Each structure stands twice: as C-alpha cells, then as structure tokens.
Amino acid sequence: MTDTKAATAIIEAIGVTKRFGAQEVVRRISFTVPRGQCFGLLGPNGAGKTTTIKMILGQSPLTAGVLTVFGKPLPDHASAVRARTGVVPQEDDLDPDFTIAENLRVYASYFGLEGRDLGTRITELLEFVSLTDRADARVDQLSGGMKRRLTIARALINDPDLIVLDEPTTGLDPQVRHMIWARLRDLKQSGKTLLLTTHYMEEAERLCDDLLIIDHGAIIAQGSPKALIREHVEPEVVELRGADGRIESLLGERADCRIESVGDTVYCYTHDSRPLTERLQGTPELSFLHRPANLEDVFLNITGRDLRE
Amino acid sequence: MDLRVPRIRPKALKVWRRNVLVWRKLITPSLLINFGEPFLYLLGLGFGLGMFIGNMAGLPYLTFLASGIVASSAMNTASFEGMYSVYTRMVPQRTYASMLATPLDVDDIIAGEMLWCATKSTISAAAILLVASLLGAVLSFAAVLAVPIAFTIGLCFAGPAIVMSAFSKSYDFFNYYFTLVVTPMFILCGVFYPIDSLPATLQSFVQVLPLTHAVALVRPLVADQPLTNAGLHLGVLLCYAAISYYLAVILVRRRLIV
Image 1 (tube, rainbow over the protein chains, first blue to last red):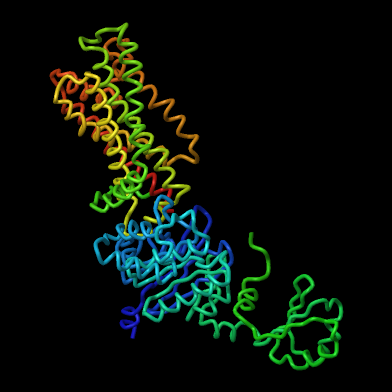
Image 2 (image 1 turned 60 degrees about the vertical axis):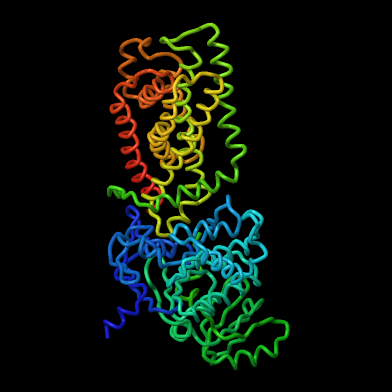
C-alpha cells in the first residue's frame, strides 16, 4: 500500500520547515501530491506559499524535513527535478531582449532542447496559448494577459510531468482567466500533475482536486474543496445589506444562524435558510443574497477576516 | 552559506549562447563602440601625445600605448559587462530567476557569464589590434596571440565584477569599484608608461595587480619583443579568475538561493 503510494507520489513533503533567522516561515508541513492531480496551495499573503514552491524547485534549501519530487530529495537533485518540471512564476521573468518565439527557443536551450522538433513544439505551444500571430512580437509589446500565456507556453517547452504555477491568474481579466483555466484543465486531462497557488478561491474550487490551506507557515486545513466546505462552514449563506440593528428581529428566536458582520454587510451561515429568507421576502427595502457556501467562506472562516498587509 | 565548490558543466555554454544571441541583435552599435573608442585613444593620445614623447621604453609611443590599451580595454569591457549587464540580468530583468527554473544552476550561470565577459573582451581587443595595425602600431604577427590572451584577461576581471554585482543594491554602487579599482589600475599598471618609472614601494604594490600582468603579456607580442615570465603572468590572471569565480558563485547563491 505504502509502496504504491510512494510510486505514484510526485511530491512528498514530510515535516518541511523553513526559517529565515528567527522567523519560521514554513512550519513542519507534510503533504503528498499524487500523479495526475491538481493540488492547490492556498493562504493569505505571507503564509509561506511561495517559499514552499521555491523549496520544491530546489531554489531554497530546507531548514528541516524531507522533500522529494519524482522520488528525488531536494535541494540536492534540483537540476534533475527541474528538468522534468514546468514553472509559471508569480512575477514575469520573460526575456525582454527576445521575441516571443525566441523566448521559447532560448528557454528550450536551457533544457538542452534544440533542432527541428523544437520548431514544431514552439508552433504547437503558441497555438495552445493563442499567440501564433504574435510569434515575432517583442515582449514589451504584449499585454499582461499575453505575457502570462507566453509564460505558460514557456513552462511547457520541456513537456514537463509536473507544472508549478504561482498565482497564475493574478491581475488578469476574466476572459484570459477563463482561457487559462481551460488550458490547465486540458493539461490535467493529458495526465500532468499541477501544483497551484492562488488567492482566488473560485479558481481553487474549479481546478483543484485537493488543497492545503496554510497560514503563518502551518497547514490549517486540507482536503478537497467540497470536503472542506462540508467540514468548515454551514452549507448556506445569506448576505444582508443595510440591516443595522434589525438583524435579531429578522432572525427570530428559532434561527439556527452563525452571524458575521463586515462593514454594512451581515453574513448568516446556516443549515436551513428558509425561515430567514421567508421573513426577508416581507422586507423589500433590504437587499439580500442567498447562495451556497463556497471555498472563500471556508478560507475566511479559518484564516479570519483581519487584513494581512 | 552554500560553500560547495562549483561544478563547471557544458550547460554554462547555454548561458553564454543566450548573451551571444542578444549581442547579435545589437551588433552594429556594439562594434561601433569597440572600434570607435580605441580609434580615438590611439589617434588622440598616440599621435597627439606621441608627437612630444617620441619613443617610450625603446618603442614608438603609438605601439607602447596600443599594446597597453589592448589589455586595459579587455579589463574595462569585462568589468563593465560583469557589473552593469550582469546586474541587469540578475536583478531588474530577473533573467537568472527564469534560468533557475530550468536545469541550470548558479554555477552554470556564473561560468556562462564569465565566458561571455571574456568573449566581449576578446572582441574589443581584436578591434583595437585591427585599428592599431592599420595605424602601423603593430610590429609583429605574434600580436595575433594577444587575442586569446585578451580572453584570459577578460576571465580575470569578469569574476571580481560579478562579485560586485552580487553585493550591489543599485547601479550606483559600481562607481566605487570603477573609481577605486579599475581607474587606478588603468593609470598605474603600465598602460601609459613603464611601471619601473614609479617609486619602488608603489612598484611592488602594482606587481600584485592583475592589469600589470596583462600588459606584460600583451606588449611584447605587439612590439616584437621577447616574452618573459609568460607562465607567471598567465598564472596570476588565471588565479584571479578562479578565485573570483568561486566567490561570485557563493555570493550569487547567497543572493538568489535563499
């Protein structure tokens, strides 16, 4: 049983810890990413997501613990691990001295890839991210969304088994974001393993089979998006606006509601919203939204609503 | 700190090749500078000043100066590339960050950069030799050997420049290195006059500076004089190159692999 698990595990982290001086940014985290899964790493800013990714890529030595990718321990086998990995970093690092196609060609050379097959591969990848007609454009002529798509194409140049994406859709418009989601699903379908960090709970909910929520460097929840919602929050949410001071009377005595207030909005988490929504029908001056609980509710519930930066 | 001895692997050539490809795009302005600057020096100083000086250390001043400029220009080119360009790729442009997501290591990146700095030194030295020979300053075909020597000079100065880049927080920092290291060598190490005309204490200090050894290698080849102590001079240059490569790798690791 353990043997088969080890054989299919792409990433295995046991008690991984990272300290910068006295500050512990990753605290004894353990997790396993099986082959073919899209695995999410969620957490507020400064939670330790990017540091964890850097350790997985051998770009940051571990302070303690064991971390293996493809069964090879890091950081000692960084070069070999990265040969089979594609990386979409948080900050753009495309080469401004080259055109789009040249970016892919030069990056491929770092993997030792050259020759005629490479030309075909570049054509396919540009098609995959819809940049075919931009092949000869310079990087500074691209929009943010195009740069991101190019970065994704670049991450695929070595036909990687593992693709690591650090906030791949941050700052992009909905069209590009949906396009990228579709491409990531294509990649998963073709058997690739994906490791994704994101702030967007909707993104994690749509893409991830399994995910970790980390805060202050430690794991605070793990599971599939559905399981996490089931475990950590009530299934229904009613959001009320402008109900100052009237909330108790609206809820009545029988209401089975957990209340959270943020500014002028009241969130009612409940197992049965009917009594509340029926009463709300009688108060047309109040605007309310009734929806199923989502991963964002889980996230806010367990990491708190305090601002982080 | 990761003090492991760096491995030199053929992968370093990929980094070198990236820089060649960029250079090829800007080849015209690059070469213009490579030819233009020494042309000015040799014309202005060699002819202008040479008119008053006549011979120096038994050589026509133009020949004396040209051989010194070949060495100092190899130094300047590698220093400039190892600071401004390397820093640009390391920090604002994040080129090394992108390379470190591939099988390349810091060891490969620094080795590739040093090879590239040395390549640029070679190009610049070759350009000066060409201009100098057109002006009649090159007295021997042995001067061709100064071209591979310029590569060694480039390696010797590339390492310390990259060490500066690894420390630097901005481009301004490089002014210190140019003012305190590069310019003093340019003035003191025998480019413009023979070092034996310096006071004795200063002479022994100048003997440990790498540019002195670079000039001592290039001048006899250009001026058709016997080359003495070639092994010592080459050894000094290669020592500087090796030690500074190791330091640069450690310091860039410290900066990028955190």
